Amino acid sequence: MNRSATAPANNVLPPPIERYTLLGWIYKNLFNTWYNALLTFLTVGIIYAIGKPAITWAIEQARWEVILVNIRLLMVGQYPIEQVWRIWLCLHLLAAVGGLSWGVWIRGYRIWGLLFLISTLGLAFLPSMSASASRGQLIALDIVALAGFGLGRLGGKRLQRTVINLWILYFPLVILIVRGLNSPEGAVPVVPSNLWGGLLLTFLLTVVGILFSFPLGILLALGRRSPLPIVRWVSIAYIELIRGVPLVTILFMAQVMLPLFLPAGMSIDRVLRAMVGIVLFTAAYQAENIRGGLQAIPYGQYEAAHALGLSGVQSTMFIILPQALRNVIPVLVGQFIALYKDTSLVAIVGLLDLLGIAKSIVSQPQFIGLQREAYLFVTAIYWLFSYFMAYLSQRLEVALGVGER
Image (cartoon, rainbow, N blue to C red; front, side, top):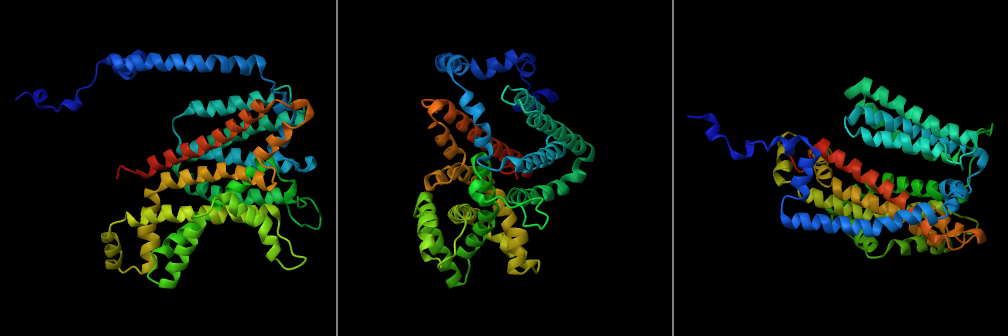
């Protein structure tokens, strides 16, 4: 019998023009039927109708000096200029760890790495970067990222655990560097949080919210499934109470109502109050996401863990919880992205995050009427970091085989 006659139809390869050429891909995905071709032409027409005037405005009419003049305010707020070297140190550490991670884990997508390097060099040679120090720091970012990438390629999989530990240590170290120390020498003095602002404050609120809401959400999810009634009732009460009110209400309570209940002469930092409010709010939603993952685990997994002689805590920590977290990675990262965008609400309670700084600079007399430029810049930053987190989530899902095994 002819073996080719019995081969399944799905093993038949398409014609070479559809496999290897851009023209074949375009035909197969955009023009393979008459209605797909019609939708393609309609979509191109809409993109042209919207994109042409938008690009014309951005190149010829927009006054981007509102961004160039206030770039330092947008990035770090009123952080002391003599201490800005700390922010550059954090960025260089991020470039080193990011380049190392790229070299260890990511084997393709070189175009994205090149875009990062080119964009950084482009920023370095903008007219607004007249200060040689800023220009040198931006160029150094590329050098550090390339060095980390090269080290990651040389080390390969042997460095995976090291890179994970570096990411775990990075974020607490950033907070320590930004805040400073009460050292006798005063080399790294404490910078009050009321001087933090712009993207720096947005980033710190997001990092603290993610670092502390995630473990708290795990505890609440386990507590809601606990056989102990008091633990289960307290967890349910907390989750339902927090989920029943908007985040802005919790922020107002933390900023306005909490000081009324403190002893006389005692005060809590405003940024710390905002961080606590964001952590408590996000943890309630994370708890429900994680609880959904726990409920998706078959009961046979619990029985198998007990059959191996594992205690309840051991079976939860080593068998059940890792599988549950793996199943809800998309939902968890989606909540982290929502947390990142929700930090803009702190502008309502008087903290000058990225959005708050943008509102303040468009009220300057020389920049009145330039709201579109300022808010478009802020929108691009929010989108960039949101897309980055979504991309990391997709890579993590592929690495762990979510939905495949």
